[in-house]
Length: 143
Image (cartoon, rainbow, N blue to C red; front, side, top):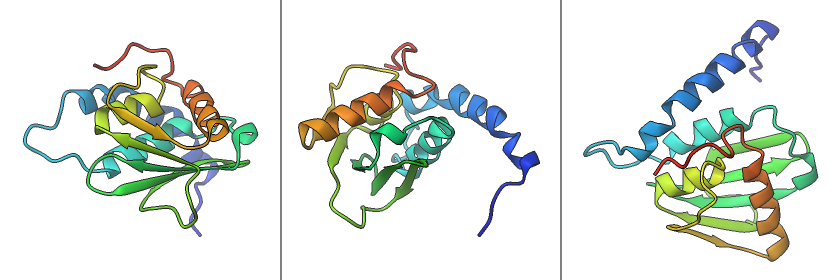
């Protein structure tokens, strides 16, 4: 198992700042490149690193935006996102245009145009609460 050293963990604020700086690039498109789901996974992981989500756990979200599915797992320890479908049945499914899904997940837009959210009311409520805890929540919409 690989773990960051204390010195490595000191890089978190710098990495988060770089991710925040690069977010607008998701909205401007990638030219002729097809969107890759992995472009969504790493920023979401980094942005939610250290965010208290224990009261929203457990929550499993299937995200369909891009070339393959991804899964968000919210546990008492934190949030993790990875490529691939969840091992168990997801409680919520989020699908749509990658830029719109990213805006929704990171709280940069409270609009859900272009995003489909399905699941039981309580699970969807917890997901919406999660998005408000993003460090980017409340910033101007990217689109």
